[in-house]
Length: 264
Image (cartoon, rainbow, N blue to C red; front, top):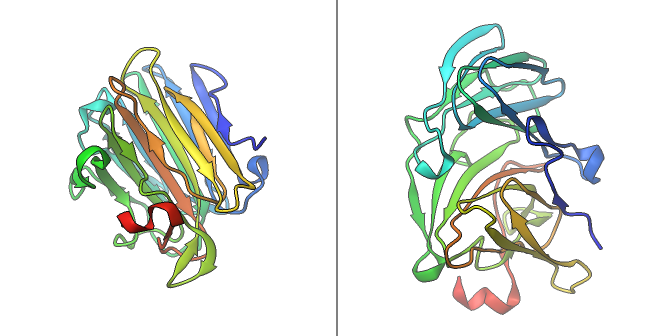
C-alpha cells in the first residue's frame, strides 16, 4: 500500500513537514505551522523558493531583509476571502510572529534566484467558479501559470461545496511531454468544515498499479506522485484544500482519465 496520506503529527507548532526526501520525489515540499499568539518561527529557504500562505489568523513577517508587516485577515479558512501570502526566494531567511492564533502553510520547490520577495494577495486574487452542477467548486489562484513571480511553484486554494466532486474529471500530470502533459508532483492540504467530518480522495493510475482511496479528515495532507486524483465531499461536509505543485517545467498540462474523457 502506498504511503500517500499524511496525518498531522501534533496540534501545535509544526504539524506537517513533507520533503522530497521523505516522500521519495524531487520537487515539492510542504510544511504547516499552527501557532498561538506571540509565538515566533524562523526558517532559511536554502535551495528552495517558498510561498507562505496565511491559511488562518495573522502574523508579522520579516523576509529577505524586509519587514512585511502584519499579514492575514480571515480567521476561519471557510470565510473564503482571498489569502494573504508572501513569496520568498531561495537563499533567504524569513521569520513570522503570530499576532493571533494562526495557521501558516509553507509551500516549497526549487528556486533559481529568478524573482524577488513580494506580497501575493489579497488584491488580485478573486474567488472563481470552476465546473458545473455537482462538479462546481471555487478557486483562489495564488500562483498559477499566469502569475510569473515564481521559478517553480504552482499554488492554489479550492473550496468544494458539500455533496460535490473536485479535481474532477479525473486527470493526471505525471509525464514530461509538454505541451501534451507536464510532470508535476502535488500535495493536497485538506480542511473539512464539520467536526468529525471527512472527505474522500482517490489516487490511481490507468493500469491500477497505484490504486488508493483514502478518507481525509480535517488537517490531513495527501501526496500525489503520479496518477489521477479526484476528491469527493459528502453531503454536509464542505471541503477546502491547498494545492502545491512543482516539476521541471512550470506549466500545468494534464490528461483526463479514459473513463471521464468525454466529460472534458
